[in-house]
Amino acid sequence: MNILDLCTGNSGRSILLEPIPNHRSDGCIRAWSAGSKPAVEEYPYWPRAPLRAQWSVEDPAAASPEDQPEAFALAYRLLLAKAESLLALPFEEMTKDDPQLILNRIGG
Image 1 (spheres, rainbow, N blue to C red):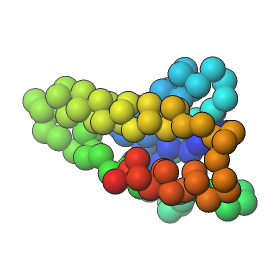
Image 2: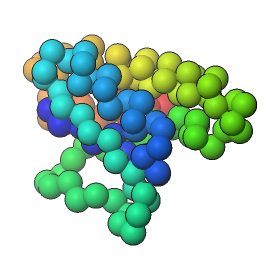
Image 3: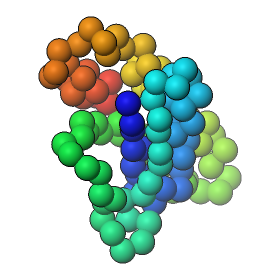
Image 4: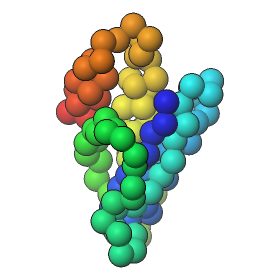
């Protein structure tokens, strides 16, 4: 499975999330990070019809410099919990529609 971790500037959340599935999925998941507005393009091209999930986590890069260490630590803990929920799923036992429903639930 391939995952694109996308956040606005690719300066915090997607970079924090990218290594989690890469290192904890035993090679079953390959993740990349990108930003939706790091330059001119709104979104990078992703072929076919990918599953999409909104995992809202405050942008730690937007915190004041003195608050950034705790903001990044909190963002990592939240993303780690969501990623661990994803990695625990029995994908081989799911129906076609299950992954999108579950991703939405994890993001909620």
